[in-house]
View 1 (cartoon, rainbow, N blue to C red):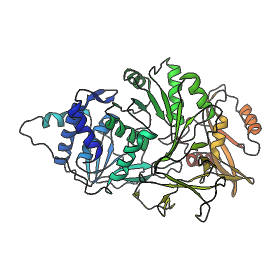
View 2: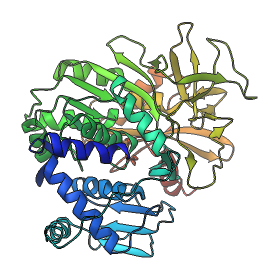
View 3: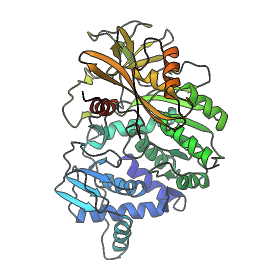
View 4: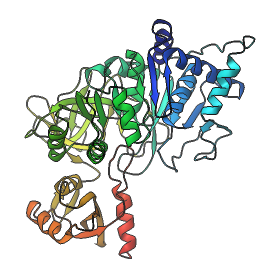
Length: 481
């Protein structure tokens, strides 16, 4: 039996009254969650959902988790598109969506909300209605979950996770990602981080906090649930800390902050130390490969050093010919391990999966001790006037400037073939952009932006990474390029 299905059944029997799921609009014990999952699985089969179909969910977080577990019970392939945005390119067999919302096409569309779930439970309580048997996945290499990812490219791709990959990751999450502590994870079920946090909570018998957005209401729910870990991308963590300050809120049981999806900045580490006074764990990995390396982060440390590979992970640096390079020499990062995804749902144009390795698109080098130092994204590093620049370093240099709320660096060519750095800023009225320009010229000589502009919002993906191509398109439009 697939691990999440087995864990739910076991906890519903052994600890039926313990909390299993907490949302802003409801709570479920393990017994109640088991009852809801069983009823929803039965209703979905009645409506025509079949094993092995690819079923997309676009639901509120708590409903999404109930429905996802029900889909696992009937051995479908599931994908959450909540928060993914349109244009996913997925070809799905069925779509389970909030009433009035339809962002992908499917032959079978079912409107699902809390009332629908409650009615399914009521109908299933009829003693004359037979239980729906659990359907087993046919093989351990069968796909059970698809997770949409696009990094900073803006091109959505579906990552196929097999039963074997998910169960391997689940057996090792406690080494680097999450354990039995109650966690406020800001990433959402449609991301690998949010999905695996939900799985781990089910495994350990801890309540899963189903988050849609980090707002004051949910922060109060997290406080009541005695959340011990705050997890998210550096941007998500920073935004949550700002909200805590503005609303004079605290997470009194907090013991750790965990970040993933991008390298945190020194300013964020300082802020966590001053405001929350808890350690920070940095995790390096990907949707495709799972966790790769982990390191506790400290003030004054090299934040580009993401640590040594986790057990079972083989990490390597390759040159342009695909040949391994010695420690200290830069090249393209690649890794492999038992938790590696099966591949993409569509054609892998970038050939990210090659020869059993996954190439995440990062450049870096290994230290003599075996730690990985990230130097930037291969696709983002640009040659500006003969100088190689990683736009992320400019983003980091802007952080903390008075009046800057958010910022994102991008590449633009006012003269064809001559790339320049641009900087988009979300700023308060009091922000002195000329002073910011002067500061960046001092901090980043030869690597500073030469195109500035204010925007209402910096486009970011679900993990908080800047979607630089969208900024390039916006400023090309502004400059009539």
